[in-house]
Length: 320
Ligand SMILES: *[C@@H]1O[C@H](CO)[C@@H](O)[C@H](O)[C@H]1NC(C)=O
Ligand SMILES: *[C@@H]1O[C@H](CO)[C@@H](O)[C@H](O)[C@H]1NC(C)=O
Ligand SMILES: *[C@@H]1O[C@H](CO)[C@@H](O)[C@H](O)[C@H]1NC(C)=O
Image (cartoon, rainbow, N blue to C red; front, side, top):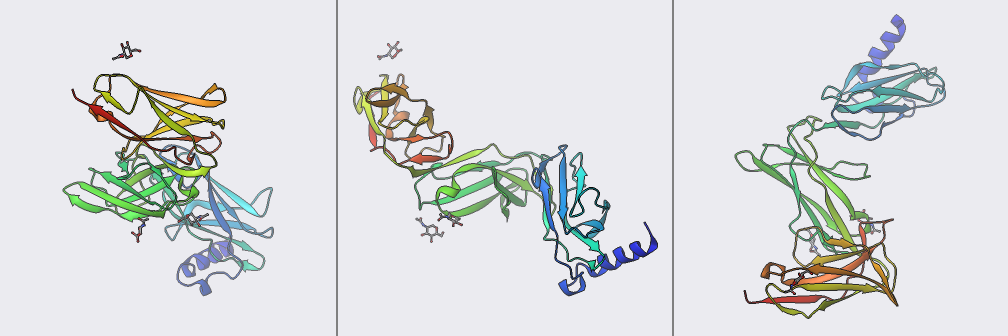
């Protein structure tokens, strides 16, 4: 690197973080990560910085300091530079910004991108105290819980861009949790969630929790119907079938028990003129299966969005 360029880079760096006014004046570039900013330890990730067609050099900073591998002269396409990280480790985790130099001077710094590494410590548990099947407008609350002494938790949604974070509440020695209040539910909340635990302000996160699927009802037209055979009151030890039926062809029927935290049972419908049906059979029922049931339909193109519920069926299990 030429002395002039080094001097310019140092100038840009030392003045950079303080105030916007002291950074360069050219428009800030865009910084992003592929395949995303939450990366499992050992996996590859690539940072991209996109400036202008006049950019002559791109630079990367991590946690406010220059990165040794973070200078790139753009090759084929001037307007962006690629910073590959073949193997993600805790040393690559942090808050990145990029900027570029062109004949007109230095650019402002990009927005900060936090690159996080996961899988370094034991996974937490992701729980919800309500059913994972919610009606629109109900409050969605997810709780991330661990006995590994994490003091921060992060929540990810499959396909989502951001990684909301909360400080952990210490419950007792080693036990901590965070409660994510996601507010009144609409279709955008349906999906597969995972949470991570971490320590202090590092960008290192634990292995992901097991996934938790949140399903939102009332998102498809039509309503299935639910019936019970031989009837809603059975003796313990008898076999019971809950029959979900609809005129419309759905890819899946789901059976949900009110108040249960378990994922719903799913079945593919069979064609039975004049419509479709699924038989949810329970052998030798016990009082644990007593309760209120509803069934729903869903399409595989949007598996987290359900139809309106059937009318409820109350199953009563008598005697031992
Ligand atoms: C949802 O939570 C907010 C804040 O906690 C509360 O004000 C609101 O009443 C709740 N709504 C429902 C439908 O429970
Ligand atoms: C759904 O909820 C999210 C988060 O609360 C909100 O940003 C979004 O605008 C809502 N979408 C609709 C269609 O109401
Ligand atoms: C329940 O179903 C099983 C298998 O279909 C059958 O062997 C059993 O006899 C049934 N039990 C009762 C009480 O009908």
